[in-house]
Length: 267
Image 1 (tube, rainbow, N blue to C red):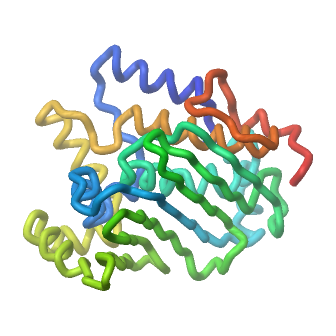
Image 2 (image 1 turned 60 degrees about the vertical axis):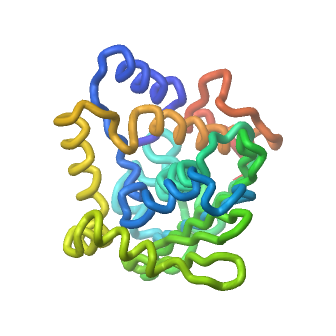
Protein backbone atom coordinates (compact mmCIF):
# COMPACT_ATOMS: atom_id res chain seq x y z
CA UNK A 1 0.00 0.00 0.00
CA UNK A 2 1.24 3.50 -0.78
CA UNK A 3 2.33 5.63 2.17
CA UNK A 4 3.36 9.18 2.99
CA UNK A 5 6.46 10.38 4.82
CA UNK A 6 4.26 11.59 7.70
CA UNK A 7 2.69 8.14 8.13
CA UNK A 8 6.09 6.43 8.06
CA UNK A 9 7.50 8.89 10.59
CA UNK A 10 4.52 8.36 12.89
CA UNK A 11 5.11 4.59 12.92
CA UNK A 12 8.75 5.19 13.85
CA UNK A 13 7.79 7.73 16.54
CA UNK A 14 5.29 5.30 18.10
CA UNK A 15 7.97 2.61 18.23
CA UNK A 16 10.37 5.04 19.91
CA UNK A 17 7.82 6.23 22.48
CA UNK A 18 6.43 2.82 23.40
CA UNK A 19 9.45 0.59 22.97
CA UNK A 20 7.50 -1.70 20.67
CA UNK A 21 9.44 -4.04 18.42
CA UNK A 22 8.46 -3.18 14.87
CA UNK A 23 10.15 -5.17 12.11
CA UNK A 24 9.99 -3.89 8.54
CA UNK A 25 9.58 -6.31 5.65
CA UNK A 26 12.90 -5.35 4.04
CA UNK A 27 13.47 -8.92 2.87
CA UNK A 28 16.80 -8.35 1.12
CA UNK A 29 18.54 -7.69 4.44
CA UNK A 30 17.77 -11.31 5.35
CA UNK A 31 19.37 -12.96 2.36
CA UNK A 32 22.40 -15.09 3.30
CA UNK A 33 25.78 -13.31 3.39
CA UNK A 34 24.53 -9.72 3.08
CA UNK A 35 24.90 -9.08 6.81
CA UNK A 36 28.47 -10.37 6.77
CA UNK A 37 29.32 -8.17 3.78
CA UNK A 38 27.77 -5.15 5.44
CA UNK A 39 29.79 -5.70 8.62
CA UNK A 40 33.05 -5.92 6.67
CA UNK A 41 32.26 -2.75 4.71
CA UNK A 42 31.48 -0.95 8.00
CA UNK A 43 34.79 -2.13 9.48
CA UNK A 44 36.62 -0.56 6.53
CA UNK A 45 37.97 -3.91 5.36
CA UNK A 46 37.66 -2.79 1.73
CA UNK A 47 38.52 0.86 2.20
CA UNK A 48 36.35 3.84 1.33
CA UNK A 49 32.97 3.26 -0.30
CA UNK A 50 32.94 5.23 -3.55
CA UNK A 51 29.48 4.43 -4.92
CA UNK A 52 26.72 1.87 -5.16
CA UNK A 53 24.25 0.68 -7.77
CA UNK A 54 21.05 -1.36 -7.90
CA UNK A 55 18.81 -2.51 -10.66
CA UNK A 56 15.46 -4.19 -10.10
CA UNK A 57 14.11 -5.60 -13.36
CA UNK A 58 10.93 -7.22 -12.07
CA UNK A 59 8.83 -7.64 -15.18
CA UNK A 60 5.05 -7.70 -14.99
CA UNK A 61 2.65 -7.72 -17.92
CA UNK A 62 -0.66 -5.90 -18.17
CA UNK A 63 -2.51 -8.99 -16.91
CA UNK A 64 -0.71 -8.61 -13.57
CA UNK A 65 -1.92 -5.03 -13.19
CA UNK A 66 -5.41 -5.88 -14.47
CA UNK A 67 -5.76 -8.61 -11.82
CA UNK A 68 -6.54 -6.06 -9.09
CA UNK A 69 -7.86 -2.52 -9.39
CA UNK A 70 -5.38 -1.10 -6.89
CA UNK A 71 -2.24 -2.25 -8.73
CA UNK A 72 -0.24 0.56 -10.27
CA UNK A 73 -2.40 3.32 -8.77
CA UNK A 74 -0.94 6.31 -6.94
CA UNK A 75 -3.43 5.97 -4.09
CA UNK A 76 -2.95 2.27 -3.29
CA UNK A 77 0.31 1.07 -4.81
CA UNK A 78 2.67 3.43 -6.61
CA UNK A 79 4.74 2.26 -9.53
CA UNK A 80 7.81 0.12 -10.12
CA UNK A 81 9.92 2.13 -7.68
CA UNK A 82 7.46 2.08 -4.77
CA UNK A 83 6.29 -1.50 -5.19
CA UNK A 84 9.18 -3.46 -6.67
CA UNK A 85 12.26 -1.40 -5.77
CA UNK A 86 11.87 0.09 -2.29
CA UNK A 87 13.38 -2.92 -0.46
CA UNK A 88 16.38 -2.85 -2.80
CA UNK A 89 16.90 0.84 -2.03
CA UNK A 90 16.86 -0.03 1.67
CA UNK A 91 19.48 -2.73 1.17
CA UNK A 92 21.82 -0.55 -0.86
CA UNK A 93 21.68 2.27 1.70
CA UNK A 94 22.21 -0.24 4.53
CA UNK A 95 25.19 -1.86 2.80
CA UNK A 96 26.80 1.51 2.06
CA UNK A 97 26.50 2.45 5.73
CA UNK A 98 25.39 6.04 5.24
CA UNK A 99 22.12 7.92 4.78
CA UNK A 100 20.97 9.67 1.59
CA UNK A 101 20.95 13.47 1.75
CA UNK A 102 19.86 14.32 -1.81
CA UNK A 103 17.86 12.68 -4.60
CA UNK A 104 17.47 13.42 -8.29
CA UNK A 105 15.23 11.30 -10.51
CA UNK A 106 13.18 10.75 -13.62
CA UNK A 107 10.25 8.37 -14.09
CA UNK A 108 8.36 7.16 -17.15
CA UNK A 109 5.48 4.95 -18.23
CA UNK A 110 6.71 3.06 -21.26
CA UNK A 111 4.66 -0.12 -21.61
CA UNK A 112 2.12 -0.76 -18.85
CA UNK A 113 -1.40 0.68 -18.76
CA UNK A 114 -1.23 2.03 -15.21
CA UNK A 115 -1.39 5.40 -13.45
CA UNK A 116 2.10 5.28 -12.00
CA UNK A 117 5.53 4.64 -13.52
CA UNK A 118 6.74 1.34 -14.95
CA UNK A 119 10.31 2.69 -15.15
CA UNK A 120 12.25 4.90 -12.77
CA UNK A 121 15.86 5.96 -12.43
CA UNK A 122 17.48 8.00 -9.68
CA UNK A 123 20.78 9.16 -8.23
CA UNK A 124 21.26 9.53 -4.49
CA UNK A 125 23.98 11.60 -2.86
CA UNK A 126 24.95 10.09 0.48
CA UNK A 127 25.97 11.94 3.63
CA UNK A 128 29.57 10.73 3.30
CA UNK A 129 29.83 11.96 -0.31
CA UNK A 130 29.29 8.60 -2.04
CA UNK A 131 26.77 8.31 -4.86
CA UNK A 132 24.18 5.61 -5.55
CA UNK A 133 22.33 4.83 -8.79
CA UNK A 134 18.89 3.21 -8.91
CA UNK A 135 16.97 1.55 -11.72
CA UNK A 136 13.56 0.00 -11.13
CA UNK A 137 11.22 -1.29 -13.81
CA UNK A 138 8.44 -3.73 -14.60
CA UNK A 139 8.99 -3.43 -18.38
CA UNK A 140 11.32 -6.44 -18.54
CA UNK A 141 10.70 -10.17 -19.06
CA UNK A 142 8.01 -11.35 -16.57
CA UNK A 143 9.61 -14.80 -16.54
CA UNK A 144 13.05 -13.53 -15.49
CA UNK A 145 12.89 -11.39 -12.38
CA UNK A 146 16.27 -9.91 -11.47
CA UNK A 147 17.62 -7.70 -8.70
CA UNK A 148 21.30 -6.85 -8.24
CA UNK A 149 23.03 -4.77 -5.57
CA UNK A 150 26.65 -3.64 -5.97
CA UNK A 151 28.86 -1.64 -3.64
CA UNK A 152 32.09 -0.28 -5.08
CA UNK A 153 34.88 0.26 -2.57
CA UNK A 154 38.46 1.43 -2.65
CA UNK A 155 39.74 -2.16 -2.69
CA UNK A 156 36.84 -4.34 -3.83
CA UNK A 157 33.62 -4.68 -5.81
CA UNK A 158 30.83 -6.49 -3.97
CA UNK A 159 27.77 -7.71 -5.91
CA UNK A 160 24.84 -9.72 -4.56
CA UNK A 161 21.54 -10.43 -6.25
CA UNK A 162 18.67 -12.62 -7.33
CA UNK A 163 17.96 -13.98 -10.80
CA UNK A 164 14.82 -16.03 -11.44
CA UNK A 165 14.64 -16.90 -7.74
CA UNK A 166 18.29 -17.96 -7.43
CA UNK A 167 20.85 -16.12 -5.33
CA UNK A 168 23.86 -14.77 -7.23
CA UNK A 169 27.05 -13.13 -6.04
CA UNK A 170 30.25 -11.79 -7.52
CA UNK A 171 32.56 -10.39 -4.88
CA UNK A 172 36.22 -9.78 -5.54
CA UNK A 173 39.17 -7.69 -4.52
CA UNK A 174 40.82 -5.39 -7.03
CA UNK A 175 43.27 -7.59 -8.86
CA UNK A 176 40.81 -10.47 -9.15
CA UNK A 177 40.92 -12.34 -5.82
CA UNK A 178 37.42 -13.81 -5.38
CA UNK A 179 35.61 -13.54 -2.04
CA UNK A 180 32.55 -15.72 -2.72
CA UNK A 181 33.93 -18.85 -1.04
CA UNK A 182 35.08 -16.93 2.03
CA UNK A 183 31.58 -15.58 2.66
CA UNK A 184 29.84 -18.88 1.96
CA UNK A 185 32.04 -20.66 4.50
CA UNK A 186 31.41 -17.97 7.13
CA UNK A 187 27.66 -18.03 6.50
CA UNK A 188 27.41 -21.82 6.83
CA UNK A 189 29.61 -21.83 9.93
CA UNK A 190 27.42 -19.22 11.66
CA UNK A 191 23.95 -20.33 10.51
CA UNK A 192 24.25 -23.88 9.25
CA UNK A 193 23.85 -25.28 5.76
CA UNK A 194 20.09 -25.97 5.82
CA UNK A 195 19.14 -22.54 7.16
CA UNK A 196 21.43 -20.89 4.62
CA UNK A 197 19.70 -22.75 1.79
CA UNK A 198 16.18 -22.14 3.13
CA UNK A 199 16.76 -18.42 3.73
CA UNK A 200 18.22 -18.04 0.24
CA UNK A 201 14.99 -19.48 -1.17
CA UNK A 202 12.70 -17.64 1.25
CA UNK A 203 14.29 -14.68 3.08
CA UNK A 204 11.00 -14.13 4.96
CA UNK A 205 12.26 -16.86 7.31
CA UNK A 206 14.92 -14.44 8.45
CA UNK A 207 12.35 -11.76 9.27
CA UNK A 208 10.41 -14.10 11.58
CA UNK A 209 13.58 -15.44 13.20
CA UNK A 210 14.98 -11.95 13.77
CA UNK A 211 11.71 -10.58 15.16
CA UNK A 212 11.42 -13.45 17.65
CA UNK A 213 15.05 -12.92 18.67
CA UNK A 214 14.49 -9.17 19.14
CA UNK A 215 11.50 -9.80 21.43
CA UNK A 216 13.12 -12.59 23.46
CA UNK A 217 16.45 -10.77 23.87
CA UNK A 218 15.03 -7.22 23.96
CA UNK A 219 17.03 -5.84 21.06
CA UNK A 220 16.24 -3.88 17.95
CA UNK A 221 15.14 -5.84 14.83
CA UNK A 222 17.60 -5.93 11.94
CA UNK A 223 15.16 -3.83 9.88
CA UNK A 224 13.63 -1.54 12.50
CA UNK A 225 11.06 1.25 12.37
CA UNK A 226 13.66 3.83 11.34
CA UNK A 227 14.59 1.75 8.29
CA UNK A 228 10.92 1.85 7.33
CA UNK A 229 10.73 5.63 7.65
CA UNK A 230 14.04 6.18 5.86
CA UNK A 231 13.16 4.05 2.84
CA UNK A 232 9.74 5.67 2.43
CA UNK A 233 11.24 9.15 2.83
CA UNK A 234 13.91 8.36 0.22
CA UNK A 235 11.33 6.99 -2.22
CA UNK A 236 9.05 10.01 -1.73
CA UNK A 237 12.08 12.23 -2.32
CA UNK A 238 12.69 10.41 -5.60
CA UNK A 239 9.07 10.96 -6.65
CA UNK A 240 9.18 14.61 -5.59
CA UNK A 241 12.37 15.13 -7.60
CA UNK A 242 10.78 13.59 -10.70
CA UNK A 243 7.67 15.73 -10.31
CA UNK A 244 9.52 19.00 -9.75
CA UNK A 245 12.39 18.33 -12.16
CA UNK A 246 15.11 19.15 -9.64
CA UNK A 247 17.28 17.63 -6.95
CA UNK A 248 15.62 17.53 -3.52
CA UNK A 249 17.17 17.46 -0.07
CA UNK A 250 16.66 14.44 2.19
CA UNK A 251 15.12 13.82 4.60
CA UNK A 252 12.13 15.75 3.28
CA UNK A 253 11.18 18.76 5.38
CA UNK A 254 7.49 18.59 4.39
CA UNK A 255 5.15 15.64 4.01
CA UNK A 256 4.95 14.06 0.57
CA UNK A 257 2.82 11.09 -0.51
CA UNK A 258 2.48 9.04 -3.65
CA UNK A 259 -0.98 10.58 -4.08
CA UNK A 260 0.80 13.91 -4.62
CA UNK A 261 1.88 12.42 -7.96
CA UNK A 262 -1.70 12.02 -9.20
CA UNK A 263 -1.51 15.29 -11.14
CA UNK A 264 1.90 14.50 -12.66
CA UNK A 265 1.51 14.82 -16.43
CA UNK A 266 4.88 13.84 -17.90
CA UNK A 267 4.36 10.07 -17.87
